[in-house]
Length: 578
Ligand code: ATP
Ligand code: MG
Image (cartoon, rainbow, N blue to C red; front, side, top):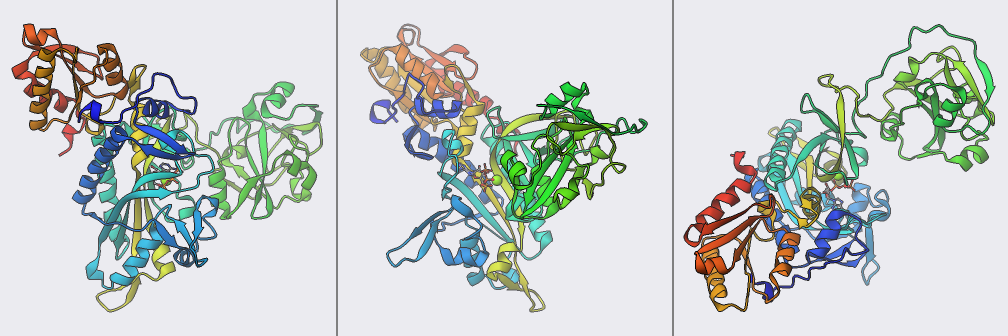
């Protein structure tokens, strides 16, 4: 490709609309433009990156036995009524009507459509396993579309669905996908972790999220430095710290703590450390008032609580609800006598059980109790693991202290089981002629999000540093002076030679000043820059610069191609994949 024939509108200024590094750099590098909130055009260079990621994904899906197809974006509501999701999916679903007032949606995911296909076309266990996938636009009316391609309302996803006759089959399909995903993100040159995640509302048991490690990530993960363990903080099991358990129980005292509502304020007022306070949070869970107790220095993990209660809706009771609806003074709520105030259930994190002489709210405006002891002064319905994991917690596998990082979820794999096959009646006949529901899994990769995640991970103050295999071009070539026919003749010849050698090269043939072209090359992030200047004429030497290290070397014209091949290979991180 020649730059003069392409549309690569680079920008010097940081656009005001861009809220993360990847968003800024993709706009500035002329790869992306916004059309509406969460809706973007991919310009030629941006689309090349997408195509390269798609190619890697295709190769690995095919290698794992996947077969590509294409499902429709427009999906009839009837299928969603059958699965029970039409009313559950909520405002994220883009809904539309046709001229006959029939309801449709734009696919945010394709379990319904593919299960409908399989129930019609697959009748025997002999046709299984099946791994069907597509790469296509998805639509989700996200509450907060932001960060450019990281959270769009229209985005490109690879989604594969596995169909097996039993759980063992699903386990094999799941493993295949786990391995394929590991290969894909390695080939994309990313630093990532596969983490255990919460299966949330989709249902099913096992699930892993593939997280690209980046400080701008929306997800928080804990990982072990001693072993392979990694988990989403939402999911990570916590062990209780059991200190203080042998202290003598003192008499409870009511103390005035005017104006002290938060743990920090109460700790200061009473001159105790936060881990000697029991924090009480109120939740409305499927219409019932539930209290959750954790140590003052911990946070409630609402997902664990929700899973434990098995409820559909759970919201924290805020100040006005707590005071107006339940008559409980916000900031002064505590477990003593709480059941008489209309709280149906009291859950406590296990660590609360080990506290002695703790401070708690007295359920009276401006007062706390000191020296409160669980079981003596209040009763808990259930103790359990209800807190959020923290850095320094011990690894559940090997007991080493855990570390914490932020991550961007680029992919997720999921054991669905028979949720959709039962709802839609997708069955096969087994050897004995019994009709059995197909066991399913689903496996997604955000292609456009992966592209943005690569930029979050690979950049410096001058611009993007693409991993070689997903860079828009591997090499950019330019003449220092495009008006000098001696230079351009050489540049033109090398450009053709590189193309013939199968190297992915773009020729910056603009008559711009060299400084402008150098800046653009750094901003766009081509892994290698090849410059034809006067030394090419006088000494037969080409200047080669590596984007990632800034290293500059000169090579004889005749050696350039083999040298470039060698460097490109060195820059690839997937050499260790067989
Ligand atoms: P998130 O929790 O970030 O909203 P999700 O768990 O709802 O994502 P999945 O249903 O697991 O997403 O979709 C599979 C993949 O699609 C995700 O791992 C992610 O890479 C990508 N993806 C999901 N939502 C978006 C979005 N709004 N914009 C871009 N990519 C997305
Ligand atoms: Mg997900």
